[in-house]
Amino acid sequence: MFDHASAQDEMQKNSPTLPYDLIVVGAGVAGLNALFASTEYLSSDARVLLIDEKANAGGMWNTAYDYVRLHQPHPMFTVGNLKWDWNRPRDYLARRDEVRDHLSASLEPVAKAVNLETKFSRRVVSCKEIHDTEGFVAEVSCHPVDRPSDIATFRARRVIHAPGLNYRVAEPLALSSNNVVSVIPQDLRQTLQDHPGTDVYVVGGGKTAMDTVLAVLEQDPARTVTMINGRGTNFLNRTRFLPTGLKRWTSGALVSSLFRDIALSFDGTNGEATVGFFRENFSTEPDAANGVFLYGLQSEEELARISSGLTRRLPGYLADIRDTDAGPEMQLRSGATETVRRGSIFVNCTGSFFRAEMQQEHLPCISPHGTLVSINARDGFHFLTSVSGFFLVHLLFRDMLRGRGFYTMDHEKLFRQNRNAWVGASAAQAYLNQVIAVQSLPMMLLDRCGLDLDRWYPLPRRMAGLYRMKARAAEDIAHCTHALDVVAQRYDVHAAPLD
Ligand SMILES: Cc1cc2nc3c(=O)[nH]c(=O)nc-3n(C[C@H](O)[C@H](O)[C@H](O)COP(=O)(O)OP(=O)(O)OC[C@H]3O[C@@H](n4cnc5c(N)ncnc54)[C@H](O)[C@@H]3O)c2cc1C
Image 1 (tube, rainbow, N blue to C red):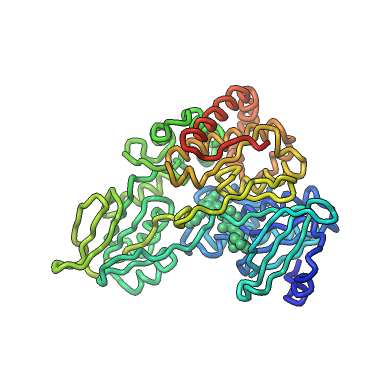
Image 2: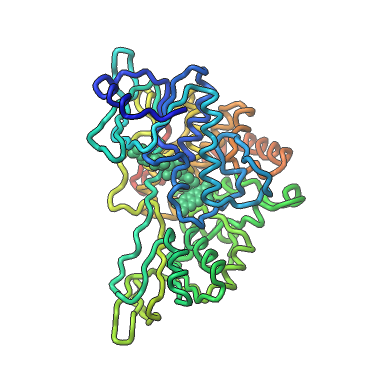
C-alpha cells in the first residue's frame, strides 16, 4: 500500500488507460466497507486504487468535533466483520479518534488481500462510465488538493464512488450581536476555557446537541446551559433496545424488527403519525412532544444526565441575537424575545447534512453498464451509507443488483421537503432492501456484515428473527413497495426498483 507521488500522476495525465480492477473514491466507512467487501471477489494480484481528498482514511471521523462519540455500541460500527483491536465492554461508545483509527486499520487486511494503492489528498473532479477499446469501463479524474490544474485520469473495470453525504464542518451562526460568542462544536472546549462561567446556548436538539450538552456538563457541571431544540428530537432508547448482560437474552428487540414496525406503520402519507408511533413505542421520551426523529440513539442514563444538568429546554428555532439598550436580545422564529447575558456562548448544533443551498448532483446508483456504483443521497440504496457500501458491492460482484426489487430513493429531495415522510420512507426502504438481501444472499455472507445491529443479540434470537423475516417477506415487501410508490407520487421524488 503506498501513495504514489506526482511523477506517476504526471505520466498518467496524457495516457489515461491504466487497467485498475477497482477504484474506490472516498475512504469513509462507506468506501472502506465497499473496498473490504470487494476483496472477496478480486484476486491477490488485482490492482485496486483508493482515493480521498483527506490526508487519511476514516472520512468524517477526521474532522468531526473532538467530543463526538458513536451512538451505537462500537462492535456494530466497523468495516465488514473486522473486530475492534481492544477489550473494551461491548456497550462502550467509541470516541472520534478511536473510530477513525479503527476505520483506518481496515486498510491493512485489504492490502494483504489485493494490490492496493492509496492516493490521499487528491480531490476527484469527475467519475464517469465510458466506452474504450476494452468495452465499457469507468474513468476517474482527480488532482492534488493543493494543485487543481494538475489533473490525472485513471480507468478501472469498476469504480465505487462513496463521497459521503456532503458532510461539511458547520460555520458559526451568523448573529447580529457583537456581545455574544458564536462557535461551532469543534471550538467548544477552548471557548469554555476562555469564557469561564458564561451561559451556554446549545442551538439544535439532535445528536450533536446531545453530545454538546454532555461535553459542557462534563467540563463544567455548574454552567447554565439552555438547549434551543426546535420541534424536539426523539432518540431510540438504547437502554431498552440494546440491553446489556443477561437482558440480551430476555428483553429488548432485534433492531430489524423495530425497522419492520416503523416501516409497517408508514403508508406513504402519514410521516407525522409514524414519528409519533416511534416516539410512543421506542424512544427515550415517549410522553414528550418531540416531533423529529433522525435515527439517533440515546441511553436512559444519558437522558437523565441531560435532564438534570440542563437549565432549560426552549422549544422553537433561533432567528438572531440583536444588541439592544438592555443588552443582547434573543429572537426566536416565533417572534418571542428575551434578553441574554453579555458574553453568552451560542453553539451551532443545527446539523451538517443537506444544509447547502443547492441539492447535490443527481448520480444514478448504478451506471447503465454497471461499471460505476455511486453511494449517494440522490439515488440512495439505504439511509446508512455504511450499509450501502457493504451490500452494493456484494450485489454488484454477484450481478444481483438489478431486477430483484431493490429500491433506490432520492433521500435528499424527500428530506428537504418533509423530514417525517423521509423517516417513514427510509425505514420502509431499509427494511425492504434488507428482506430482499436476506432472500438473495447466502447466510454466511450476511453474517459478515458487522454493521448489523441485530448482532447485538445472541445467535438463537437472531436466527429466530431471520426465520420470521423470511416467513413474512412477501406481505412485507408488498407493503413497503406500495408505501414507497405512494411517496414517489405524492412528493414527486424518485423512489423505484433498480431495474
Ligand atoms: C457529527 C456526526 C456524528 C455521527 N455519528 C454517527 C454514529 O454515531 N453512528 C453512525 O452510524 N453514524 C453516525 N454519523 C453518520 C455518519 O455520516 C456515518 O456514520 C459515516 O461515518 C459516513 O460515512 P461515509 O463514508 O458515507 O462519509 P464520510 O465519512 O464523509 O466519508 C466520505 C469520504 O469521501 C471523501 N470525499 C468526498 N468527496 C470527495 C472528492 N470529490 N474527492 C475525493 N474524496 C472525496 C471525503 O474526504 C471523505 O473522507 C454521524 C454523522 C455526523 C455528522
